[in-house]
Image 1 (cartoon, rainbow, N blue to C red):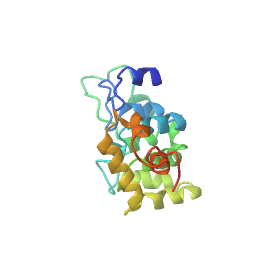
Image 2: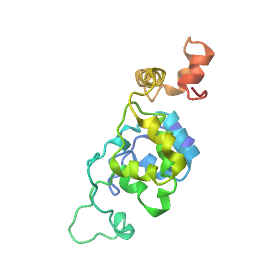
Image 3: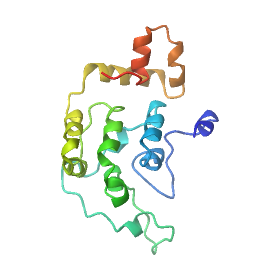
Image 4: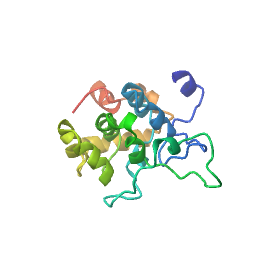
Length: 179
């Protein structure tokens, strides 16, 4: 992964054959939280994961797993754009929903969890803190970190160590310290 990124791979890439409403890199890193965190540390955009078309309203039933990303086209039907909450509803990913959402929340500002994401979080008692973490307003220090990282830009995020700032602040900007 590092080699691809060192040679200019787009960390926020979307794949036309597997259309999603969020970067495909997030989709492929969901089963490996350390890889997901690595991508987010490098500036991958997690905001689209929380932009659900349905919001707090009811979601349509999830399509059968075999038709979600099958290689064989079904008739003339164009594949629809898959939402983040739909991917998390897949049985092979749903048990990781809480930790995945928790990691992503560290890299986004004030977002609203859609009803399906709330449903996943409510399914496990220990994930209640994740729901609280998503409630606005987010801590000011967190929002400032996001703003500084955005101003630096994802292509220069690796240069945080060169900023004339105290080490403690640089570690905070790099997510190396917790609040």
